[in-house]
Image (tube, rainbow, N blue to C red; front, side, top):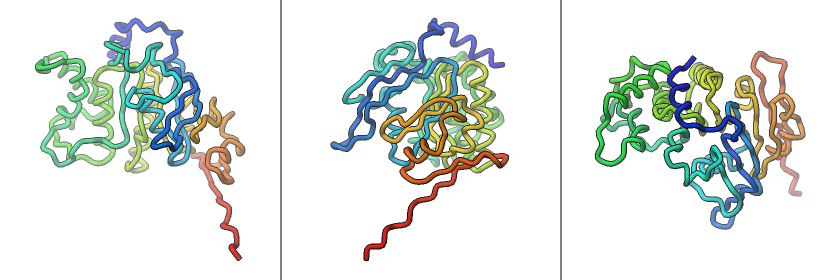
Length: 278
């Protein structure tokens, strides 16, 4: 479906039996406060995972550990069999869309230039983008469905359109592994559904996708595996097997029920009322 993905990944020579991600007994603390405690997880190539859990569960931290932005105090991390800091030219096989984009929305910059930012690591110092780089920008914009916005200023876009621009920036290196942190945050319902469908298409074309999400009910319609996190890895596996009442209670620290009877499954959380202090 996506010939550019097959072209790019075939040149990386990554054996198919090597996991896209291996995390082993990882511990991370901030100022003495534990954030991740003994987390171990293996993500095979070609799979589609969601990291689920409450606020403060360590989901964003785990993504940053995988990308190499945070070094764990203990444990090992491998991306395509290599430590994140030693990926070398394989780093272009890793695409990352953080939740909080450090881009001034009112800076006079066009969509195509934002997407080109994703190529800078491949260009090297003092090298200007060439025709191949601009072709990659056009292909990424086409892939996320917004080629008509190429010349549009970033501030003139809707929240859903901007999210697709940032996704195109991650795709412009033609990665084999895509990591996304809450990609639908601040996006309306229609744009959320459309974005999930796009990610599903990328996965079907052979890309490994791992995303952080709070949309427990919606995201489970698209992914093939979930990892339930609350500092520790509570459970992982297929959504229909893993998302039990016990797992949700362990994750959210309260009574939680996952309903499947509606067209869109949804999560209901019932917290215990505070005890009477008298």
